[in-house]
Amino acid sequence: MKEIAITDIENISIGQTENADAGTGCTVFVAENGMRAGLDIRGGGPAGRETALLDPLAAAKEIHALVLGGGSAFGLAAAGGVMAYLEERGIGFDVGVTKVPLVVQSDIFDLTVGRSDIRPDYYMGYQAAKAALEAPNYRDGDHGAGCGATVGKLLGMEYCTKTGIGSYAVQIGELKIGAVVVLNALGDVFDHDTGEQIAGLLNEKKNGFRSTKELMMQKFEVRENKFVSNTTIAAVVTNAVFEKPQLCKIAGMAHDGMARSISPVHTSADGDSIYALSVGEVEADIDAAGVLAAEVLSRAITRAVKSAESAYGFKAAKEL
Image 1 (cartoon, one colour):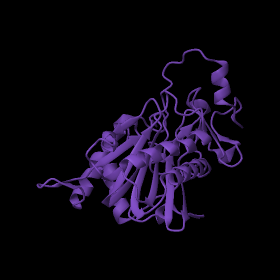
Image 2 (tube, rainbow, N blue to C red; image 1 turned 90 degrees about the horizontal axis):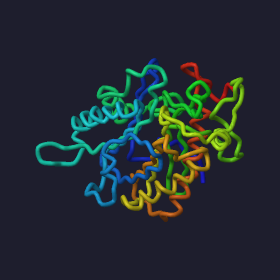
Image 3 (cartoon, one colour; image 1 turned 120 degrees about the horizontal axis):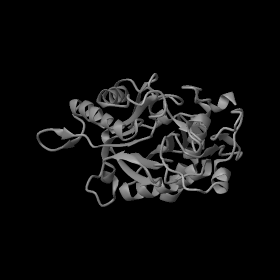
Image 4 (cartoon, helix red, strand yellow; image 1 turned 30 degrees about the vertical axis):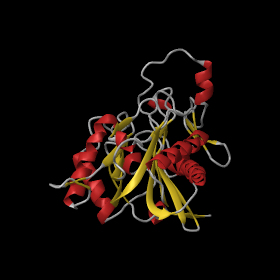
């Protein structure tokens, strides 16, 4: 098994745009010839668009783009711009009079970072889709949907850690599988290999961390409005050939990687959602692919921490 770049997986392109002043952005995955997709949502507060397309009972066999964005539900407008660009390129489901691009989207809540009145919109989605096909520009860190990502917010934004978007991919023989994650959790983040806490709730001096889990167990009174500023969203991408029901299972197994690296996770205050995308024809075992999906997702989470820079008054882990 060797590490590769997420962009080394063929038949899918990634474009990003962000507004650094506002602290928000979007990351768009485009497959010109369509991609099979599944989804597993474990968090209690997701913001999504057209996710019903990925129900195994839904008729659609493929989608053409996936958007990971900021802006909470406001940011779902970005998908309209993605659709417009793909329609111009003749990409989509043929309905006779035009081709309708099938675009699915999930967003994080970053309205408490930068400016709350600027969110991913039609224009930002259009530009990200255009970048994906004309000048792919994926980068880890404070880019795209990860521009305003933070973690460790049980006590509010004052004690959170700045994170971002991260990726990790591997190749075994002909099989390629990788993950991209926008890390924006209520809980703390732990290194996949060492178990060490690497991001999350800052201590009172803001020079180290404390445990969100322990604090929640000590103070179990009802907390209102915990939903503010959370949700971790991710895409697992593989060149293995799987159909929608299998991809939903792989997405579910990938949540093991999220649970290994984030604690607490899948709370009512998070909208944790993982997509699984199939863009190739390599034969692979579904369970092996699920195990690998969890592995690359854990490592992508670590990278989302380590590639982030301090911004908007929030410290990144590299400063601690």
